[in-house]
Amino acid sequence: MSAGFFSEYNCMVLSMLYCLEHKIQFKLCSGATNFHLEGWNGFFLPFCEQVEDNSKHFKTCNWNYALKLIIRDGRFSNYRSLMPYLLWTKKRLKTQDVFGRSRSSHRAKKNYQIPGLGINGNIQEACSKLIEITWRYNEKTEKSIDELKNSVNISGEYIGFHIRGGDKFIEHKVEPVEAYFDKVSYPNIRTAFVLTDDYSVIDYIHRSYPEWNIKTLCREEERGYFFNDFLSQPEEVRQQQHLRLFASVDILSQSRQFIGTYSSNPGMYLGMRNAKICTGVDYDTWVLR
Image 1 (cartoon, rainbow, N blue to C red):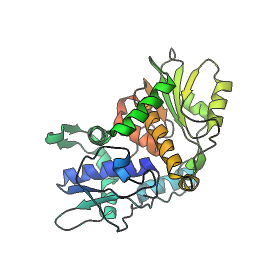
Image 2: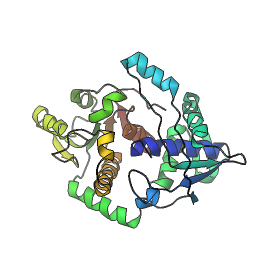
Image 3: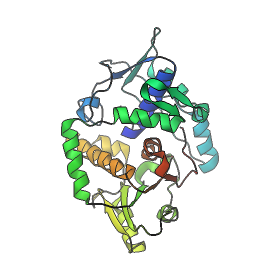
């Protein structure tokens, strides 16, 4: 696994949907990843048959989406990445054989019906069901997540923000903080939970929006997420960062309104997990990419 967690997870969910639709058996390769030496089972409960495989499987580039970024922002994003997932049929398919198909733009316009799983809706609704099936913490993780969420001490209605800094500029221009607050639809709510990788964002919000009560799990020493730097961290540090990330997205999913960027993988994920609360800053609608 050589990409961020939600990049990999989102692709897994989309690939699962493709496999279900085409009656392809889905298996999970449970080898060590950059988020946990025990792979998927290090944080989550197993949900399907797991196998071991040392072959390299590549996520194909979504060229239609890349072209949109080039035209819009003059930027290019390299989406190639190793994935710890295997997809099989009578004729074995490699991960890259399915990834490109599962992320084809026409799939965002389809209705999906898989009665056995209670799926009957658009792609976001279908993926929401798959997230319910897969996003289940193991006992150790659930205890840690509960402790983190309790430490935030947030209750009642609140707005959720995901304001990404760090290497986000590689995929999309960094939106100003004001663009997020301009999207708030509930003027009577002045409590917010902010998922960010850069505590200077929190400092800026405190100065610019003093009437807001801001909650976050971002630490004061954090100054932006850069993937290569993350990989150089010790295993325990990487695990703790993921636990805080998971707790944060759980909190965001329960917000009255989530405001973020659909071009970021946490934003794409939340657009599948709980579409009805989501507002995009970069795009008006959720983007399949």
